[in-house]
Image (cartoon, rainbow over all chains, first blue to last red; front, side, top):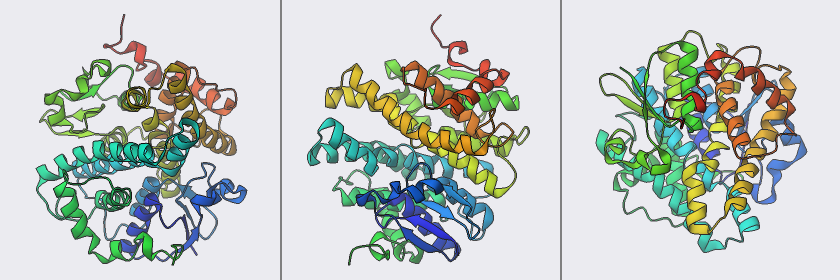
Length: 214
Length: 214
């Protein structure tokens, strides 16, 4: 059986769950409670020396970490339905949107970073929220502009589902979770609302994860 | 003519310059001085609403941002010499190394972030350096472990040059620039020393950039 090492509230893990659902791939969850630092357990560090989720582990033990690397791998191994366009320029545009979220928004908002700010910089909840919302806002300004220009109200790129959409919805979820204002991003919010109605997004949401609190 | 919008000291831009040199692609630099915030000029924001470097602009005006998206695009358009292996698992491993640097080290150390820490959190030079070195160390611990396991002393993945090497050298350059200790990372330092002797790395280094101070 293939295993996704994840955590119910990890938005990077959710990206992978969406792609797996779109492609109809069967998998099992191995949940690592980030609030208890279970992703730093010795056994898991052997699989993933970075000690982060998600990691993708196949039946023979082969494991790869980093959500975007996993998404690209799934795309190559299970190309249908495609989550990347076929034309090189369109593929580059989608990857650019993906990286805007996966590199320039999410890593700044990761639990390990906010923990560091609390422990080493004595940040309180208000300052942490300011931090989170600032970097989301910076990224969303660029994404809103790109989404507005291309004109689709259902997808972040073009008229079909891509990896950019797969990354957008978990990031919007984080924005709502931390109460970051989204008033300036009506295009993104509209796209997010449409995408959230798609089964692959709805059934993989954090609250539906087997590791979520009941 | 194709243009790389970059800045001499931007390590994400350097990644792209290395790949361009490896593949023998002819290009021109359009330099944006980040210390003067030139990457936020209105004309450039039209090309790249995120206001970051690098961006890749082709002769007909088509432009794409995000270094990793540009690297993947160059790989698809100019496949020889390859900077990604051909087997899906090996490709995933290389991309995982790339993302460890491009998502989990570099964005936390970006100039826009250290500026924010100085302006909003009153961070002085010492605290900024602690911050930079902390996130480099976190990432390097994982990279050193992966490099050590695979046994090559010349490349971060396997026995040939990949995008992982292309990302490693600029990150090691940043570590040295900010005085972050590298004693615990002998494998990475060794690989970096070998790679730095390769023409594509040596001739594209920041100090050789036309925009570098003389």
